[in-house]
Length: 374
Image (cartoon, rainbow, N blue to C red; front, side, top):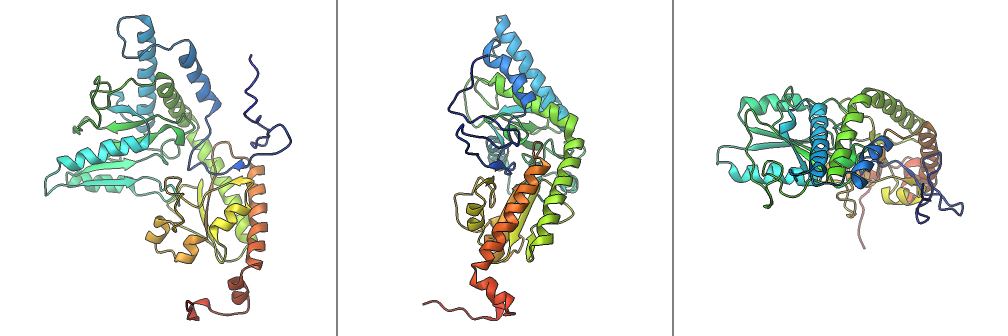
């Protein structure tokens, strides 16, 4: 086989990577932003990147037939994961496009007395799970369309579009150990949900999403769904244990740590902690050998505190001190322990430098102080 591209550092057993000169890239604890490609998914994609390169919409020769068969198999794999009919699955470029197709076109079709409910199944910042089944029942009773962005839920918790009365669902490939650039939109057939296409063209995907479906990416999405269906229960149990290990160790060593979000109705692999009297961005910079986030990758360029944390009533100071820890399928116990060790070390160091922390240790109630600006 050809030698690996020397511009990419080789993978190391710990999950971290080296640049050939002894330096290490950070270990990865940000799976809510994106997940690594599962090797089994890559194996399924490779033939369609090299040998089986036909256009799946070409109906006159074997190249097209092979690609179409692979595309339809992937469509069935996606449908099977959520209890849908394969005819209800539309391939898209990802959850963002799926969300836009589902929401914008439906809103345009509504009358004054109709509405749409759109809910994120699992929040990507604090991991809170919404009562999707109950919301679906209410929407169906009121004859209201129900859309859910399930990018953070698919493959992690059981989803059934019929049991949950879901009319539209957005899915992202790269959030379930699949490739980037591909996703899917579930569109209910009965009772039928009608959408207008966002783009015109060759009429592919039942006329809803024109453009050639990228067979390798669709195959990768299907394979990722297939693997998720087989391993969901095992992954959930293992990730729950690692999450409990991380939270317990940090909170036993560091006082004034708050776990953000509902403690009971949550996905365990998304842990959002606020470290009082520590600036979150400072802690992120200190933890440079661990890839972490202070919130959503969609809004991480902003220095404003998380709108999610503000919405659930978190004090602005605590919102500014939050860090999100993402634990996934390939996270190891050693990586969790390393992250905990470094986190405890740097939180204590940063607090020692904080005059606010010193005042709290002296028994001063910070809320009783009237601060003035000069």
